[in-house]
Amino acid sequence: MAVLLAAGGGVYAAVSGGDDDKKPTAASTSTPAGRNRQDPTPEPTGSGESAGGHDRGESESDPNDVRRAGEAKVLYQTPAPEVSKKGVDVPGFWVMDGYVVKAVEDKIVAYKDDGTRKWALSLPKAVCAAPNSTTDGKVVVAYEGHGKDSCSQLALIDLDKGVKLWDHDAPEAGSFGGGYTSMGMAQSGDLVGMSWFGGSAVIKVHDGKEVAIEKPSPGCSVDGYAGGKVLLRAYSCTNGTAKLQKVAPNGTITWAYVVRKGYKVDKIFSTSPVVIALSDQDRKTGGILAISDSGKERSALAVGNQSYQPLCGTDLFGTNAGSCQGVAASNDTFYLPTEMTQDSAKGPTSEIHAFDLDSGKRKWAAKVAGRMLLPLSVDGKNLIAYEEPSYGQAGLVVSISPEGGKPKTVLRLPQATREAESGFYSATHTYRNGNFYIASNRITGTEGTSEKLIMAFGS
Image (cartoon, rainbow, N blue to C red):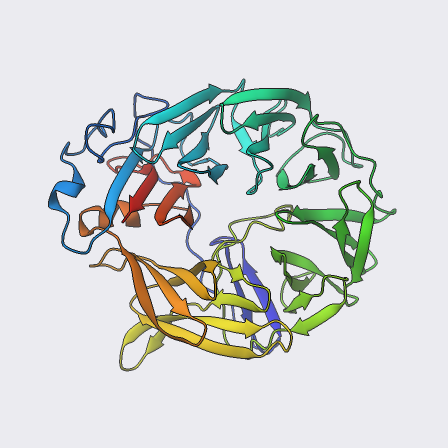
Protein backbone atom coordinates (compact mmCIF):
# COMPACT_ATOMS: atom_id res chain seq x y z
CA MET A 1 0.00 0.00 0.00
CA ALA A 2 1.07 3.57 -0.56
CA VAL A 3 -0.37 6.20 1.76
CA LEU A 4 -0.14 9.83 0.70
CA LEU A 5 -0.94 13.07 2.52
CA ALA A 6 -1.51 16.17 0.41
CA ALA A 7 -0.54 18.90 2.87
CA GLY A 8 -1.82 21.72 0.68
CA GLY A 9 -5.35 20.44 0.29
CA GLY A 10 -5.53 18.57 3.57
CA VAL A 11 -6.84 15.35 2.07
CA TYR A 12 -5.68 11.84 2.84
CA ALA A 13 -5.48 9.13 0.19
CA ALA A 14 -4.41 5.48 0.21
CA VAL A 15 -3.42 3.92 -3.10
CA SER A 16 -1.76 0.67 -4.13
CA GLY A 17 1.73 0.47 -5.56
CA GLY A 18 4.43 2.56 -3.95
CA ASP A 19 6.38 3.13 -7.19
CA ASP A 20 3.85 4.80 -9.46
CA ASP A 21 4.31 8.29 -7.94
CA LYS A 22 0.55 8.82 -7.94
CA LYS A 23 -0.37 11.91 -5.96
CA PRO A 24 -3.79 13.22 -4.92
CA THR A 25 -4.86 16.58 -6.29
CA ALA A 26 -4.71 19.23 -3.57
CA ALA A 27 -6.78 22.41 -3.33
CA SER A 28 -4.94 25.69 -3.10
CA THR A 29 -4.14 26.99 0.37
CA SER A 30 -3.52 30.56 -0.74
CA THR A 31 -5.30 33.12 1.39
CA PRO A 32 -8.03 35.07 -0.43
CA ALA A 33 -8.50 38.80 -0.01
CA GLY A 34 -10.41 40.02 3.03
CA ARG A 35 -13.64 41.86 3.78
CA ASN A 36 -14.98 43.70 6.79
CA ARG A 37 -17.80 43.14 9.25
CA GLN A 38 -18.75 45.16 12.28
CA ASP A 39 -20.13 42.69 14.83
CA PRO A 40 -17.44 40.48 16.43
CA THR A 41 -20.05 37.98 17.68
CA PRO A 42 -22.95 38.26 15.24
CA GLU A 43 -26.46 37.07 15.89
CA PRO A 44 -27.85 34.30 13.67
CA THR A 45 -30.08 35.14 10.72
CA GLY A 46 -32.58 33.40 8.51
CA SER A 47 -34.66 31.74 11.20
CA GLY A 48 -37.51 34.15 11.75
CA GLU A 49 -37.86 36.70 14.56
CA SER A 50 -35.80 34.62 16.98
CA ALA A 51 -32.72 35.24 14.87
CA GLY A 52 -32.12 38.61 16.45
CA GLY A 53 -30.39 40.23 13.48
CA HIS A 54 -29.54 40.11 9.79
CA ASP A 55 -26.42 39.31 7.80
CA ARG A 56 -25.00 42.60 6.61
CA GLY A 57 -24.73 42.95 2.86
CA GLU A 58 -27.31 40.24 2.16
CA SER A 59 -31.01 40.14 1.58
CA GLU A 60 -32.96 40.22 4.83
CA SER A 61 -35.44 37.66 3.58
CA ASP A 62 -35.79 34.43 5.49
CA PRO A 63 -34.81 31.42 3.31
CA ASN A 64 -37.62 29.48 4.97
CA ASP A 65 -40.10 31.77 3.19
CA VAL A 66 -39.09 30.15 -0.12
CA ARG A 67 -38.57 26.66 1.23
CA ARG A 68 -39.68 23.97 -1.19
CA ALA A 69 -41.69 20.88 -0.30
CA GLY A 70 -39.50 18.25 1.35
CA GLU A 71 -36.66 20.65 2.15
CA ALA A 72 -35.21 21.01 5.65
CA LYS A 73 -35.85 24.14 7.69
CA VAL A 74 -33.03 26.62 8.21
CA LEU A 75 -32.82 26.87 12.00
CA TYR A 76 -30.36 29.74 11.71
CA GLN A 77 -27.30 30.91 9.80
CA THR A 78 -24.65 32.98 11.53
CA PRO A 79 -22.55 35.38 9.44
CA ALA A 80 -18.80 35.16 9.82
CA PRO A 81 -17.60 37.96 12.12
CA GLU A 82 -14.93 40.53 11.51
CA VAL A 83 -11.53 38.91 12.15
CA SER A 84 -8.13 40.38 12.94
CA LYS A 85 -6.50 39.36 9.64
CA LYS A 86 -7.22 37.58 6.39
CA GLY A 87 -7.29 33.80 6.54
CA VAL A 88 -7.90 33.02 10.23
CA ASP A 89 -8.26 29.50 11.58
CA VAL A 90 -11.15 29.25 14.07
CA PRO A 91 -10.84 25.85 15.82
CA GLY A 92 -13.40 24.69 18.37
CA PHE A 93 -16.98 23.52 17.73
CA TRP A 94 -19.12 21.41 20.08
CA VAL A 95 -22.69 20.19 19.63
CA MET A 96 -24.51 20.01 22.95
CA ASP A 97 -28.12 19.17 23.89
CA GLY A 98 -30.22 21.87 22.21
CA TYR A 99 -27.37 24.25 21.43
CA VAL A 100 -23.91 24.47 19.88
CA VAL A 101 -20.75 26.26 20.96
CA LYS A 102 -18.26 27.89 18.59
CA ALA A 103 -14.91 29.56 19.24
CA VAL A 104 -13.90 32.51 17.04
CA GLU A 105 -10.60 34.19 17.91
CA ASP A 106 -10.99 35.53 21.49
CA LYS A 107 -14.75 34.82 21.68
CA ILE A 108 -16.60 31.61 22.52
CA VAL A 109 -20.33 31.80 21.78
CA ALA A 110 -23.22 29.37 22.36
CA TYR A 111 -26.23 29.37 20.00
CA LYS A 112 -29.52 27.67 20.82
CA ASP A 113 -31.29 25.63 18.16
CA ASP A 114 -34.09 28.23 18.05
CA GLY A 115 -31.57 30.78 16.75
CA THR A 116 -31.04 32.78 19.95
CA ARG A 117 -27.74 33.24 21.71
CA LYS A 118 -27.33 31.27 24.94
CA TRP A 119 -24.13 32.92 26.18
CA ALA A 120 -20.89 34.56 25.07
CA LEU A 121 -17.49 34.46 26.74
CA SER A 122 -14.34 36.50 26.03
CA LEU A 123 -10.78 35.26 26.52
CA PRO A 124 -7.65 37.43 26.75
CA LYS A 125 -6.48 36.29 23.29
CA ALA A 126 -7.58 34.10 20.38
CA VAL A 127 -8.29 30.38 20.72
CA CYS A 128 -5.57 28.59 18.74
CA ALA A 129 -6.29 24.91 19.53
CA ALA A 130 -9.17 22.86 20.89
CA PRO A 131 -10.13 19.18 21.23
CA ASN A 132 -13.16 17.71 19.47
CA SER A 133 -14.61 15.92 22.51
CA THR A 134 -15.81 17.19 25.89
CA THR A 135 -16.03 15.86 29.45
CA ASP A 136 -19.31 16.36 31.31
CA GLY A 137 -20.00 19.47 29.26
CA LYS A 138 -16.55 20.95 29.86
CA VAL A 139 -13.62 21.42 27.48
CA VAL A 140 -10.02 22.64 27.76
CA VAL A 141 -8.99 25.10 25.04
CA ALA A 142 -5.65 26.70 24.26
CA TYR A 143 -5.33 30.38 23.47
CA GLU A 144 -2.47 32.59 22.34
CA GLY A 145 0.34 33.40 24.75
CA HIS A 146 2.84 36.22 24.80
CA GLY A 147 5.29 35.07 22.11
CA LYS A 148 4.82 35.01 18.35
CA ASP A 149 3.00 31.82 17.27
CA SER A 150 2.84 30.71 20.91
CA CYS A 151 -0.30 28.72 21.76
CA SER A 152 0.66 28.51 25.43
CA GLN A 153 -2.33 29.45 27.59
CA LEU A 154 -4.99 26.94 28.69
CA ALA A 155 -8.51 27.45 30.02
CA LEU A 156 -11.31 25.11 31.12
CA ILE A 157 -14.68 26.23 29.76
CA ASP A 158 -18.08 25.18 31.14
CA LEU A 159 -20.07 24.83 27.92
CA ASP A 160 -23.43 24.95 29.72
CA LYS A 161 -22.91 28.12 31.75
CA GLY A 162 -20.38 29.88 29.52
CA VAL A 163 -17.83 30.48 32.29
CA LYS A 164 -14.09 29.93 32.59
CA LEU A 165 -13.34 27.56 35.48
CA TRP A 166 -9.55 27.84 35.50
CA ASP A 167 -6.75 29.45 33.50
CA HIS A 168 -3.13 28.17 33.44
CA ASP A 169 0.07 28.27 31.44
CA ALA A 170 0.70 25.17 29.35
CA PRO A 171 3.27 22.80 30.93
CA GLU A 172 6.84 23.28 29.80
CA ALA A 173 8.18 20.19 28.05
CA GLY A 174 10.35 19.33 25.09
CA SER A 175 13.91 19.95 23.94
CA PHE A 176 12.87 22.94 21.80
CA GLY A 177 11.59 24.93 24.75
CA GLY A 178 8.17 26.51 25.13
CA GLY A 179 7.38 27.70 21.62
CA TYR A 180 4.06 25.82 21.49
CA THR A 181 3.88 26.04 17.70
CA SER A 182 1.21 23.97 15.90
CA MET A 183 -0.55 22.87 19.09
CA GLY A 184 -2.69 19.73 18.83
CA MET A 185 -5.15 18.73 21.58
CA ALA A 186 -7.25 15.67 22.42
CA GLN A 187 -9.55 15.17 25.42
CA SER A 188 -10.77 11.93 26.99
CA GLY A 189 -12.33 11.63 30.43
CA ASP A 190 -10.28 13.71 32.85
CA LEU A 191 -7.22 13.81 30.57
CA VAL A 192 -6.09 16.21 27.84
CA GLY A 193 -3.16 15.21 25.66
CA MET A 194 -1.26 18.05 23.99
CA SER A 195 1.54 18.00 21.44
CA TRP A 196 3.34 20.81 19.69
CA PHE A 197 6.50 21.27 17.66
CA GLY A 198 9.20 20.27 20.15
CA GLY A 199 7.12 19.09 23.09
CA SER A 200 4.10 17.35 24.60
CA ALA A 201 2.25 17.00 27.88
CA VAL A 202 -0.86 15.52 29.52
CA ILE A 203 -2.97 17.48 32.00
CA LYS A 204 -6.07 16.88 34.11
CA VAL A 205 -9.32 18.44 32.91
CA HIS A 206 -10.69 19.34 36.33
CA ASP A 207 -7.70 21.35 37.60
CA GLY A 208 -5.24 21.73 34.70
CA LYS A 209 -2.38 20.09 36.59
CA GLU A 210 0.19 18.10 34.62
CA VAL A 211 0.04 14.31 34.80
CA ALA A 212 3.23 12.32 35.28
CA ILE A 213 3.38 10.20 32.13
CA GLU A 214 6.15 8.18 30.54
CA LYS A 215 8.47 10.65 28.83
CA PRO A 216 9.83 10.01 25.34
CA SER A 217 13.24 8.31 25.26
CA PRO A 218 16.22 10.21 23.80
CA GLY A 219 15.77 10.55 20.06
CA CYS A 220 12.00 10.00 20.35
CA SER A 221 9.02 12.32 20.44
CA VAL A 222 5.24 12.32 20.78
CA ASP A 223 3.65 12.93 17.38
CA GLY A 224 0.13 13.55 18.64
CA TYR A 225 -2.88 12.44 20.64
CA ALA A 226 -6.43 11.39 19.76
CA GLY A 227 -9.30 11.41 22.25
CA GLY A 228 -12.95 10.52 22.73
CA LYS A 229 -13.74 7.31 24.60
CA VAL A 230 -10.03 6.63 25.16
CA LEU A 231 -6.80 8.63 24.87
CA LEU A 232 -4.23 7.36 22.37
CA ARG A 233 -0.67 8.62 21.85
CA ALA A 234 1.43 8.33 18.69
CA TYR A 235 5.15 8.04 19.42
CA SER A 236 8.14 7.80 17.05
CA CYS A 237 11.96 7.81 17.16
CA THR A 238 14.78 8.87 14.88
CA ASN A 239 15.97 5.23 14.60
CA GLY A 240 12.84 4.35 12.60
CA THR A 241 10.83 2.78 15.44
CA ALA A 242 7.35 3.92 16.47
CA LYS A 243 4.50 2.98 18.78
CA LEU A 244 0.82 3.60 19.33
CA GLN A 245 0.07 3.82 23.06
CA LYS A 246 -3.12 3.79 25.09
CA VAL A 247 -3.05 6.16 28.06
CA ALA A 248 -4.97 5.08 31.18
CA PRO A 249 -6.94 7.62 33.27
CA ASN A 250 -4.07 7.77 35.79
CA GLY A 251 -1.52 8.53 33.05
CA THR A 252 0.08 5.12 32.80
CA ILE A 253 0.53 3.34 29.46
CA THR A 254 -2.00 0.48 29.25
CA TRP A 255 -0.61 -1.05 26.06
CA ALA A 256 1.74 -0.20 23.22
CA TYR A 257 1.40 -1.38 19.64
CA VAL A 258 4.83 -1.58 17.99
CA VAL A 259 4.67 -0.24 14.44
CA ARG A 260 6.62 -1.86 11.63
CA LYS A 261 10.13 -0.40 11.53
CA GLY A 262 10.49 2.51 9.15
CA TYR A 263 6.84 3.55 9.61
CA LYS A 264 4.98 5.76 12.06
CA VAL A 265 1.38 6.53 12.98
CA ASP A 266 0.33 9.27 10.59
CA LYS A 267 -3.35 9.60 11.53
CA ILE A 268 -5.65 8.11 14.16
CA PHE A 269 -9.00 7.82 12.40
CA SER A 270 -10.85 6.30 15.37
CA THR A 271 -10.00 5.58 19.02
CA SER A 272 -12.87 3.15 19.72
CA PRO A 273 -12.51 0.96 17.72
CA VAL A 274 -8.89 1.84 17.00
CA VAL A 275 -8.18 2.52 13.31
CA ILE A 276 -4.91 4.15 12.27
CA ALA A 277 -2.99 5.11 9.14
CA LEU A 278 0.73 4.41 8.89
CA SER A 279 3.25 6.17 6.69
CA ASP A 280 6.98 6.18 6.15
CA GLN A 281 9.09 9.25 6.85
CA ASP A 282 8.37 10.72 3.42
CA ARG A 283 4.64 9.89 3.60
CA LYS A 284 4.88 7.87 0.38
CA THR A 285 4.11 4.33 1.60
CA GLY A 286 2.10 2.87 4.44
CA GLY A 287 -1.30 1.33 5.15
CA ILE A 288 -4.48 1.46 7.24
CA LEU A 289 -4.74 -0.86 10.25
CA ALA A 290 -7.34 -1.81 12.84
CA ILE A 291 -5.94 -2.43 16.34
CA SER A 292 -7.71 -4.55 18.95
CA ASP A 293 -8.69 -3.38 22.45
CA SER A 294 -5.61 -5.18 23.79
CA GLY A 295 -3.21 -3.41 21.46
CA LYS A 296 -2.75 -6.23 18.95
CA GLU A 297 -3.10 -5.91 15.19
CA ARG A 298 -6.69 -6.74 14.28
CA SER A 299 -6.52 -6.39 10.50
CA ALA A 300 -4.99 -4.48 7.61
CA LEU A 301 -7.62 -2.83 5.42
CA ALA A 302 -7.58 -4.14 1.85
CA VAL A 303 -7.74 -0.78 0.09
CA GLY A 304 -6.38 -2.20 -3.18
CA ASN A 305 -5.66 0.42 -5.84
CA GLN A 306 -8.46 2.75 -4.72
CA SER A 307 -7.69 6.31 -3.57
CA TYR A 308 -9.51 7.52 -0.45
CA GLN A 309 -10.14 11.10 0.61
CA PRO A 310 -11.20 11.78 4.21
CA LEU A 311 -10.78 15.39 5.34
CA CYS A 312 -7.67 15.65 7.49
CA GLY A 313 -6.79 19.32 7.17
CA THR A 314 -3.30 20.76 6.90
CA ASP A 315 -1.00 19.40 9.62
CA LEU A 316 2.54 20.40 8.67
CA PHE A 317 4.16 19.27 11.92
CA GLY A 318 1.98 16.17 12.41
CA THR A 319 0.72 17.21 15.85
CA ASN A 320 -3.02 16.76 15.13
CA ALA A 321 -3.11 12.98 14.85
CA GLY A 322 -6.85 12.70 15.51
CA SER A 323 -8.13 15.60 13.42
CA CYS A 324 -9.63 13.78 10.40
CA GLN A 325 -13.27 14.16 9.41
CA GLY A 326 -15.17 12.26 6.75
CA VAL A 327 -14.64 8.87 8.40
CA ALA A 328 -16.86 6.82 10.71
CA ALA A 329 -16.59 3.57 12.64
CA SER A 330 -18.79 1.08 14.45
CA ASN A 331 -17.59 -1.90 16.50
CA ASP A 332 -17.03 -4.03 13.41
CA THR A 333 -16.99 -1.66 10.43
CA PHE A 334 -14.93 1.30 9.22
CA TYR A 335 -16.19 3.72 6.56
CA LEU A 336 -13.95 5.62 4.12
CA PRO A 337 -14.87 8.02 1.30
CA THR A 338 -13.19 7.63 -2.08
CA GLU A 339 -11.86 10.52 -4.09
CA MET A 340 -14.03 11.78 -6.95
CA THR A 341 -13.59 9.66 -10.07
CA GLN A 342 -14.87 9.95 -13.62
CA ASP A 343 -17.58 7.45 -14.57
CA SER A 344 -18.03 7.02 -18.33
CA ALA A 345 -21.81 6.91 -17.96
CA LYS A 346 -22.56 9.12 -14.94
CA GLY A 347 -19.68 11.60 -14.97
CA PRO A 348 -17.95 12.47 -11.66
CA THR A 349 -18.87 10.03 -8.88
CA SER A 350 -17.77 9.30 -5.34
CA GLU A 351 -18.29 6.32 -3.06
CA ILE A 352 -18.16 5.24 0.55
CA HIS A 353 -16.55 1.87 1.17
CA ALA A 354 -17.31 -0.16 4.28
CA PHE A 355 -14.51 -2.38 5.64
CA ASP A 356 -14.82 -5.33 7.99
CA LEU A 357 -12.50 -4.57 10.91
CA ASP A 358 -11.89 -8.25 11.69
CA SER A 359 -10.90 -9.36 8.20
CA GLY A 360 -9.92 -6.02 6.63
CA LYS A 361 -11.99 -6.90 3.57
CA ARG A 362 -14.41 -4.52 1.88
CA LYS A 363 -18.03 -5.33 2.75
CA TRP A 364 -19.95 -2.98 0.45
CA ALA A 365 -19.89 0.28 -1.47
CA ALA A 366 -22.42 3.11 -1.88
CA LYS A 367 -22.09 5.47 -4.86
CA VAL A 368 -23.48 8.89 -5.81
CA ALA A 369 -23.01 10.92 -8.98
CA GLY A 370 -21.88 14.54 -9.14
CA ARG A 371 -21.18 14.96 -5.42
CA MET A 372 -18.65 14.13 -2.73
CA LEU A 373 -20.08 11.58 -0.28
CA LEU A 374 -18.69 11.82 3.28
CA PRO A 375 -19.37 9.59 6.32
CA LEU A 376 -20.66 11.47 9.37
CA SER A 377 -21.62 8.95 12.05
CA VAL A 378 -23.23 5.58 12.72
CA ASP A 379 -26.90 5.44 13.79
CA GLY A 380 -27.69 1.94 14.98
CA LYS A 381 -26.75 -0.27 12.05
CA ASN A 382 -27.00 2.49 9.44
CA LEU A 383 -24.35 4.93 8.30
CA ILE A 384 -25.25 8.63 8.26
CA ALA A 385 -23.44 10.52 5.48
CA TYR A 386 -23.34 13.95 3.87
CA GLU A 387 -23.69 14.48 0.14
CA GLU A 388 -21.95 17.78 -0.50
CA PRO A 389 -23.77 20.31 -2.70
CA SER A 390 -23.19 20.11 -6.44
CA TYR A 391 -23.05 23.01 -8.88
CA GLY A 392 -26.83 23.11 -9.16
CA GLN A 393 -28.21 21.22 -6.15
CA ALA A 394 -28.03 21.70 -2.38
CA GLY A 395 -26.56 19.04 -0.12
CA LEU A 396 -28.24 16.03 1.47
CA VAL A 397 -27.92 14.15 4.73
CA VAL A 398 -28.49 10.49 3.91
CA SER A 399 -28.75 7.11 5.61
CA ILE A 400 -27.07 4.02 4.15
CA SER A 401 -28.12 0.52 5.18
CA PRO A 402 -25.66 -2.15 6.41
CA GLU A 403 -25.80 -3.70 2.92
CA GLY A 404 -24.83 -0.46 1.20
CA GLY A 405 -26.78 0.40 -1.93
CA LYS A 406 -28.57 3.66 -2.70
CA PRO A 407 -28.47 6.29 0.08
CA LYS A 408 -31.85 7.23 1.57
CA THR A 409 -32.45 10.95 2.14
CA VAL A 410 -32.77 12.03 5.78
CA LEU A 411 -32.53 15.82 5.29
CA ARG A 412 -32.76 17.64 1.98
CA LEU A 413 -31.02 20.96 2.50
CA PRO A 414 -32.73 24.04 1.03
CA GLN A 415 -31.94 25.20 -2.48
CA ALA A 416 -32.14 28.77 -1.19
CA THR A 417 -28.98 28.29 0.91
CA ARG A 418 -26.99 26.16 -1.56
CA GLU A 419 -24.54 28.96 -2.33
CA ALA A 420 -23.86 29.63 1.36
CA GLU A 421 -23.56 25.90 2.01
CA SER A 422 -20.94 25.69 -0.75
CA GLY A 423 -19.07 28.74 0.50
CA PHE A 424 -17.18 27.24 3.45
CA TYR A 425 -13.42 27.10 2.88
CA SER A 426 -13.07 24.42 5.58
CA ALA A 427 -15.85 23.23 7.86
CA THR A 428 -16.94 20.72 10.49
CA HIS A 429 -20.12 18.77 9.65
CA THR A 430 -22.21 17.23 12.45
CA TYR A 431 -25.57 15.45 12.46
CA ARG A 432 -27.21 14.98 15.86
CA ASN A 433 -30.79 14.46 17.05
CA GLY A 434 -32.23 15.26 13.62
CA ASN A 435 -30.29 18.50 13.15
CA PHE A 436 -27.39 19.11 10.79
CA TYR A 437 -24.71 21.70 11.53
CA ILE A 438 -21.97 23.17 9.36
CA ALA A 439 -19.37 25.19 11.28
CA SER A 440 -16.46 27.05 9.77
CA ASN A 441 -12.89 26.06 10.63
CA ARG A 442 -11.35 29.00 8.76
CA ILE A 443 -12.59 32.48 7.91
CA THR A 444 -10.92 33.68 4.73
CA GLY A 445 -12.14 37.27 4.79
CA THR A 446 -12.71 37.23 1.02
CA GLU A 447 -13.96 40.57 -0.25
CA GLY A 448 -17.48 40.57 -1.67
CA THR A 449 -18.54 37.22 -0.21
CA SER A 450 -20.98 36.37 2.57
CA GLU A 451 -19.12 33.73 4.56
CA LYS A 452 -21.01 31.93 7.27
CA LEU A 453 -19.76 30.93 10.70
CA ILE A 454 -22.49 28.33 11.39
CA MET A 455 -25.46 27.00 9.44
CA ALA A 456 -28.03 24.84 11.21
CA PHE A 457 -30.80 22.77 9.60
CA GLY A 458 -33.65 20.71 11.02
CA SER A 459 -36.64 18.70 9.84
